[in-house]
Image (cartoon, rainbow, N blue to C red; front, top):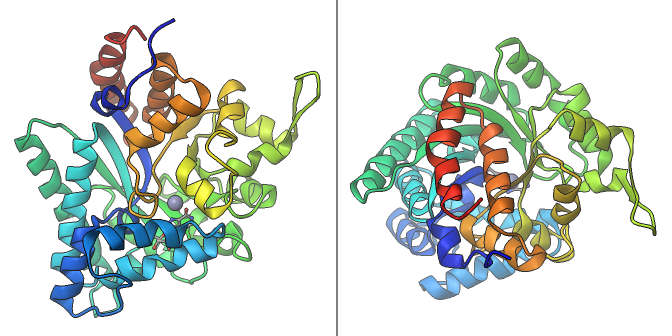
Length: 362
Ligand SMILES: O=c1[nH]cnc2c1ncn2[C@@H]1O[C@H](CO)[C@@H](O)[C@H]1O
Ligand SMILES: [Zn+2]
């Protein structure tokens, strides 16, 4: 038996992150500083430790709707170019320090226009911040590549506009599109026009589905909207039957997801906080990985879950006894599922990921 990967080793290993929200990953100290600088006076705590603890506990309500309420305070301090750019730069620095070599970071431009910013300005500020973060990381010897995903809010009606924005910036660092927000009552087909437009533009998108609502949401996301990947997708297990003798039967939707290698952007800690999973040990990721679904591991919101990608992976090492081969498989799954061009994905897999995991015997 190979020794289990330690938290330090997992942090040092190159990792790939597909599902991380910019407005869910601020440093608590930055939230405080920006609030002071912008006159945002609604923060629930006024020191770094209590504010960090507040986010994690307020987000652990067992409901997605209550979890999402905590974003009022991060979005609240991200309403000017300086703040947005700073948060984006720090995000990349933090991911690079955690050993992430490729990340797709998402945000909803429409949430950052309360004080008059134009949508284009928000996107440009984020992209500039990413470039700054990449340069700062390089100065400390860490190489990371970052792409942006533009998110439209599913309860709102701006998805077509946001999809057009994603296409406008596709050659400047935006690699895809997403919808997020409360899932129950807001099915993906509400935004069918935007998805059809993106498909005509040969663009990529993922859809938050199967997190706080079940199979119909996943089915619409794939079969009506044409999503390339699923944000979370945990409820796909509702279409998997495990008999008492251990034999497994997949329903038609689960079979489609596995057969078509649809990437599942799974976020263990976030799912426990919103009640989508009972605990990390009982997270469907264990079963889905065993069955060979294209599982990827993600952070969702590092601030609200007080986590990092290496921590999420280490939680799985503890819960499921994952070793280096499992970590390599999850990481390569994620890189294969990225929205950048095929040749660039292969280069990261062959040039960076495989050699590093081979050094651990995987
Ligand atoms: O796990 C999630 N499920 C659904 N929506 C989410 C999740 N995490 C964050 N957001 C929503 O996405 C917006 C843009 O980043 C956030 O403001 C939050 O409202
Ligand atoms: Zn999410």
